[in-house]
Length: 297
Ligand code: CO
Image 1 (cartoon, helix red, strand yellow):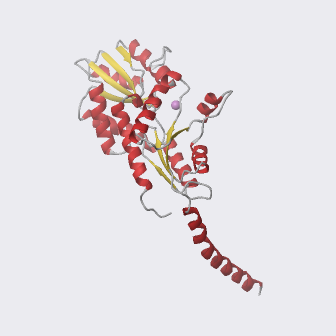
Image 2: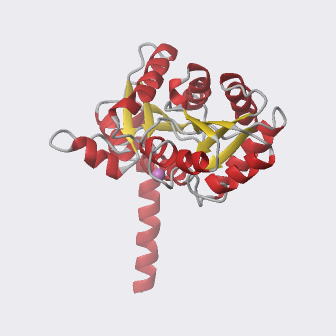
Image 3: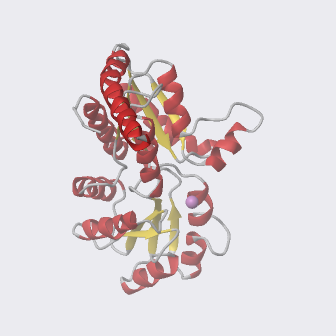
């Protein structure tokens, strides 16, 4: 008897929710649609590195005039540092919640990360957790990081070799962050695409298998005397200034100089280049287009 009553209650509940849910959905849809863009970066505490983010902000505003553009930083350490004594910058989750609260129903999120690693996947989880929920945005569409598809790699290789040509005896090394995430294969993938164009353009990483010693040994085999170090990062922040170009004996510049190479470190992030940043903007366009597509949860 108890079991039967219980089953009946369950049935009643499911019938009730079936009739109530569409009503709720209809109520949610009644909100006037409002579109916004959220740019998500790791963040930087180096003011001189901010110019790269500012450049991307400008390009996004030019690409989507009239669409409000907001920012969020994925690094809790950077948010704390930047917010010291003032207002804390938003995390992606907070920015999405804040925008929903302000009436944004459709939000295109563009990560300014270089590869689809841990932070990109965290961002996807955050977007999915808030999308379509009570008081959340109706739609959240997340764009791809800089180097995500084969087309991205081909375009990046073309732009980077054009921006940093190498003459005889010279090489250019693009130094990425490196990661233990499976998306770390993006670095050797870019190396392979670059190699189709030039033997003098190499890819290394601050963390991982292709560090300064490995790259220096390779440059010696190629009889290279002079090398340009280019951060394969959105901004030329802490890693670019210290790990790559810094004066400490274990920096890329120091190790290569000690090996007899003439080293020229570049202190500009990829987002400072309108051409390279164009790849991120193109991904943002795809994210905005994705807002209009039907999808099932
Ligand atoms: Co780092």
